[in-house]
Image (cartoon, rainbow, N blue to C red; front, side):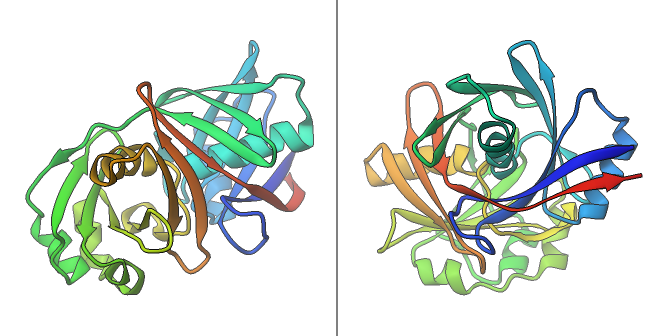
Length: 262
């Protein structure tokens, strides 16, 4: 079997930055074990598979170890392939996913994604979170639909310089960890650690902004927000908190296209 594979750097207009995702367009689904094996072989934070359905697509995402319910950067990467490589006459793309229906449109070079808002609850910090991060956050909230703990700091340098104990953070599974702070150069910064899913640090993570944008919108008193994910590769996200959901936009660039033969 031969399958086309594309590797797209998401949330950046430069190769070697942003977050790389593999994208495989399919005519019909492969069995789950084969898709997981491909994702494991790719060894990227996410491999996306999509299948045409009606006027849109079904979309699924796999880390190197398991399928996940929501992934922003691989949604952007899939949209890049459909708009810029496969070509479509539709002004917007609709994806059916485990997290509901997602829509993406192009605005110049930006891919504009409409995500659901993630409900969050403030909570006490569990001991593995405090031990793993090594620094007390000012507050902590939790999202259960896309399981993550969010640790908020008063100084963005705490976020930029942190070197967490990933083995300790693994104890929080199925929850991963977001650290975030307001910023002097953009509206807010964040980093994301998901070691129990085979992702020590994700370079740029669109999905976590479904909770970060409503949170920082309320904190900063503004609806349009410029976010930076302060990983080594780094990425820029242009966001808006709306009544119906969260808008997350970013650039993409193609790094590679090839063929899987198995």
